[in-house]
Amino acid sequence: MNSKMRVAILGATGTVGQKFITLLTDHPYFEVAELVASERSAGKRYVDACAWKQNTPIPGYIADMQVKSLEDTLDSPVLFSGLDSSVAGAAEERYARLGHVVISNSKNHRMEEDVPLVIPEINPDHLSLIAGQKWDGAIITNSNCSTMFLAMALAPLHETFGVEAVQVTTMQAISGAGYPGVASYDILGNIIPYIGGEEEKMEIESQKILGTLADGKVVDADFVVSAQCNRVPVVDGHTETVSFSLKKKASLEELRSVMAGFRGLPQELKLPSAPDHPILMMDDADRPQPSRDVWLEKGMATVVGRLRPCNVLDYRMVIMGHNTVRGAAGAAVLNAETMFRLGLFGDNPAEDYNTEELKRRAYALSTDGMRDVVCSK
Ligand SMILES: NC(=O)C1=CN([C@@H]2O[C@H](COP(=O)(O)OP(=O)(O)OC[C@H]3O[C@@H](n4cnc5c(N)ncnc54)[C@H](OP(=O)(O)O)[C@@H]3O)[C@@H](O)[C@H]2O)C=CC1
Ligand SMILES: N[C@@H](CC(=O)OP(=O)(O)O)C(=O)O
Image (cartoon, rainbow, N blue to C red):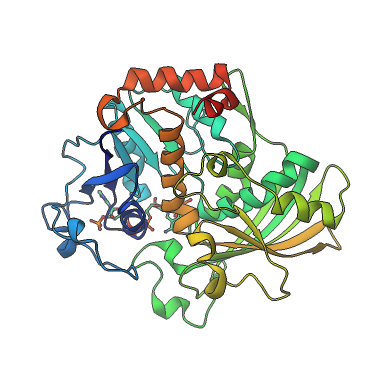
């Protein structure tokens, strides 16, 4: 391969957009070539347009880049989207129509029948849905941030024992609300027991992710989820307490073993952003804690602790993860890395990407099966 694939970041000035920049700097497959934000930012240098909130400085090559608007023509084939959901729906669709591959974080297209909602450790085969998309390009989505950790923790349990019912209560960090997000007056020393639309998303997204493909469609997994979502005064890291029942009886040791041993395609392919342990089990009685554990596996782990029997459902546990890394930008980057290594962007993505080949190769994923594609790499 001669060079890296050019990518653009939509919503580059936002919380998720900034995380894309940090994760894509010095990336082995992709180079950030274009930055896009609202009319408020367009035309300005990135450093002047953005309220940078990361713990590392703005990378030098990014600081002076001129921000583009959604009206501008982009020449990067792959677009990472951290757009505000008020504009993401139409903008992402327009770019897909123009032949771009949009790897989106936003909620707008997640539940559409022909749009894959992908966590590559769980359902990389769902990428084949893009073969049937109506656009020349494609839209690929990752889940809601709270759903990410729930779906990850449930995946090995569902595969081995079958999940029947789930009750989850979230304690979500303020970075999940973007910037400036929730007013300090409202959140300091407080808990807000409502996050608009969050419970509804958590109650349906996991079933699509853990669903199976049949005749080119996803058949949702058949468990029920009841979610209660709260905003708490934590900067980064969503914590969730989960009770669940299973279809088959299982011992605590069996649960522990399937969760700790869970691995997927990103680990098999040793993708640059793949955590070695997608589920990290902790034994300490008072863990996981966001301020201590959120950066484990570079923010890409789902950390699970306090796995124990439940008096109402079968078992309960506490799960936690970095909402803007594994729950947002890192999830999208891992999706793009998976597509890259599965050959969906072509054999030499920097030079020969084209939309017809993308669709053909996506279709081949469904006919040849993931194992064949993976083994041939
Ligand atoms: N924060 C998180 O943990 C997670 C967020 N998400 C989703 O990711 C997306 C981004 O979230 P987040 O980064 O937190 O939000 P922010 O509010 O921090 O950033 C929003 C971004 O969208 C841009 N934008 C806003 N309005 C327009 C417009 N009219 N035209 C073009 N660009 C516009 C902003 O540009 P400008 O600066 O110029 O206004 C900014 O770059 C949302 O859809 C969110 O739901 C998903 C999972 C987790
Ligand atoms: N709602 C989440 C973040 C988010 O934006 O989710 P979604 O991408 O599903 O809209 C939070 O507040 O923590």
